[in-house]
Image (cartoon, rainbow, N blue to C red):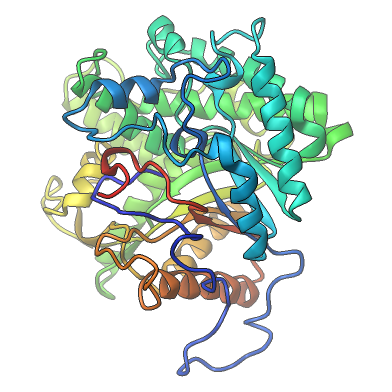
Length: 471
């Protein structure tokens, strides 16, 4: 995840070590069954290559699209990821600290631009292969299970120049080649895979930044094409794994989505409708295809309608071919679990004016262009990285499981220390994680929702994009 609002740090190690204790406020009935950790439940934290590794051009790594962006758009990025947390050099020490915390899972991403510096499978980087093999072994040596994200926004910049990015279907083919190589090299040691980290957020954030920086042209109508291609890439990788690798490796591959669960501002039915519209368009559009085989009917209707009103010749939301629909769901969903990146939610209300979405700064920064398609939805509050919402997990889990009936992994959940509490965060970050892990466990037990793991963001202080290191 990326902080666009001045977040200082999300780090677990530097800020709190006891937040993982699941406790319950005094006014909540002490029901041992509800507060018992689910059997096999894993607790961990995460990092991403582009935000933590540093060593951006060492040992054969090529420039990634994020490297190029942050180093050439200095009016937006006052700091860069060239050094970052130096995780590439000090990962053994970092993972040892994770062991001290008693963590049982570790989520990390592999750098596409480190593995394939030229973007081609024919030219892998042997030093990168060795590094990630050693990294995975270090995770296991420290008593944790590795959770691997294949792609966290950092494809080789050479591929961006060649293809124009994720609006080009060539990126799907390139990504499948890359994923196959990762399965071949690391699959015997990895149980949990997420091909693409929150494709909905990538497409909202990175292409517009590339356009604003002047690095390349950005078409504001291209968001859904970008998202469409990440969904197809995920489905292709899932089917590849099931057909070629699953029998031997027996792992799980799941879709990742950034979710800002919306809740109604009042008990008025219209506000409930507004929350449903918000959740369907932002989260449902990104996940429905891999479970139900197509976009939500509401998304199709609204985006087609608005595209026509814009005078566009075709809808901004692409259509899946019959062959692609078969790829998505024939033989079952193309996902073994749903991976949720969760920070906070939004309060919304229904308004008569279809284009009155309110003046919430974070919504306008983090939700466009999807927000403009949410007719009758006014955002009142929420969406920050330092907001404690004790119902966050309950809202997100109930919506996700009732819609998809797949096990859930929390891949990111963190608190941005904008007020500079640092290690004196007992009433901020520690309370945030206590409340969220407690809500996760209680909701899982109360509604029999299968939860695989929880990962705090992040294990160490990392580069938070436009917020740099200090906000």
